[in-house]
Amino acid sequence: MKSIVPAALLLTLAGAAHAEFTLYGLLDASYGKSVSDGAQGLKADFHSGGDNGSGEGNSTTKFGLKGSTEVSPGVKANFDLQSSGITSNGEVNSPFFGRQAWLGLSGSFGEVRLGKQDSVAFQTMVGYDFNGASNGIAALGYANVGPWETGRVARSLQYISPSFSGFKAQVGLQPATNDPAGTLPADKSKANGQLGLTFASGPVSVSAAYESKRTEGGEKFGSLAGSYDFGVAKVMTSYAKSGAALKGVGLGVVVPVAGASVGAMFGKNTGTIKGKAYEIFANKEVFKSTIAYIEYGHANAKAIGGLNPPLGVPAGTSGSGYALGVIYLF
Image (cartoon, rainbow, N blue to C red; front, side, top):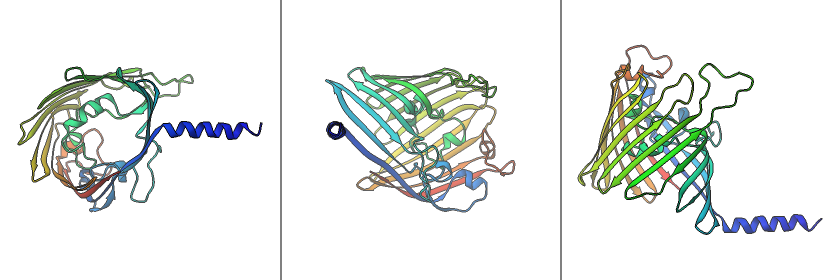
């Protein structure tokens, strides 16, 4: 029996030697305040991208572990475990692996994933936000018109197709939560489906996304977006709808200037909220894997008082925010 444990350990190490594991992450350090902070009258401060539930700076400070192993000729097994945002105090927001926790297979057939991951709508549409859906100032988010609005989904089975002549599809399925004791609220979860379609060729990109209701009391979600790259500037437009509140259009432009990207985003809610928001931004890779950025955003009172108004904000209050920061990727 004594020889079994060392043998098992050797087999484990031998398997690990053939696998490809990567420790990766993003650190976002900035000075400023979010649009929400501005509406609450809070002062600017130094922030990590994980502060206020990843509501500060441009991107979320996080780390992850991902791996890929060939398990059959032409077929790889993959996984991704990505932490929640890391705060200025060094704490990791809960749950620990709150952003990604999935495994899957990939090959010439495409890719299949199972676990917690970004929604199909987010993966399909976030690229149309030229400032990366900034944590603190995202105009499309504050106006409640983001084509990427639906959040992460747990217990999700997703399939991503290969690209066929510029066309790519992604589908997702999530079963309803088991509730044998009847303890879930009236808007208990529903089995739901997600679909994302993209066509990209040369300077043109067009995408559509759809998601059925996640809960009995929830809303369906649908969005369209398109972009065109003129070379001297890239422009986008989008439309999103989910019930009477999340409904409206987005516009954006980004221009290359001396190695930097300079742009603006605008969102207008045409639903019950009627809010408007805009942002302007600039970013540039100043060193290898190191990006410096500056951004400013404003949301009017109707946008601030929309779906989830900040606590303690008087009615009729607008908000402005900004950030001057550095992002380091590893």
